[in-house]
Length: 276
Ligand SMILES: [Zn+2]
Image 1 (cartoon, rainbow, N blue to C red):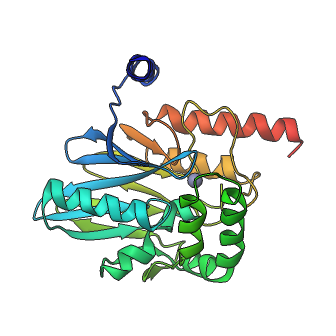
Image 2: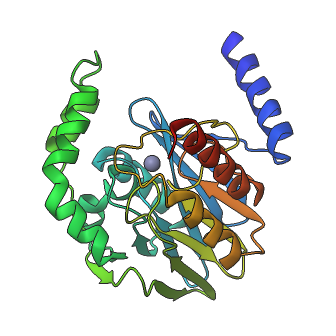
């Protein structure tokens, strides 16, 4: 009962902060979905602690597009089971917005299911050259956890690059089911290769790891970031897509275009403090 009340209060608080109700539904032990709009779902994977967002878009003609993936194989399998049981057999396409595991940790499973995965050549190069370094970090973060699932799953995980690549500076326009998905690279940010994806007819921006939620007051993991360029990159996103109705950050609740200004402000304050 206590848990039910606090979850209810949490939803109320979120709804008040963002002006939107963000009811979450559970898919499996670590995986949740929130329906943002008709046929558009934010998928949140907690593996182990912090939740990371992907976006699943159901499209006419039994098609679907997945932007970013759960962190690893078990979450990605659960997601695909949920998609199939909820919507039937779909022709799926995936997009990776960066080289970290919260962007592409599901690629091994997606590629084994013959699902095409789009991503920049730079992302493919980074994960290929630095997969051991990233995996060591994930194993280090999960080694001391009592629940061995996290460590074991990362130990088994093969971090694979996207198999449909394009030059990052050129971006990508992907037309699926009457929607245009535009992959845009504004410059370096939380990683050197993070991109955003804009859904033109739905006016939804998947900001991924370069965009922070209203809940965040500082940048999170910045070991691979370009702190100096990041605020400028956000500014380029603001100029490029001036009519976003909904913005989805890599972590935390989604919101409107205020998230972009908020991210830029946090970064500028951080940089001023750090003398960057
Ligand atoms: Zn992230």
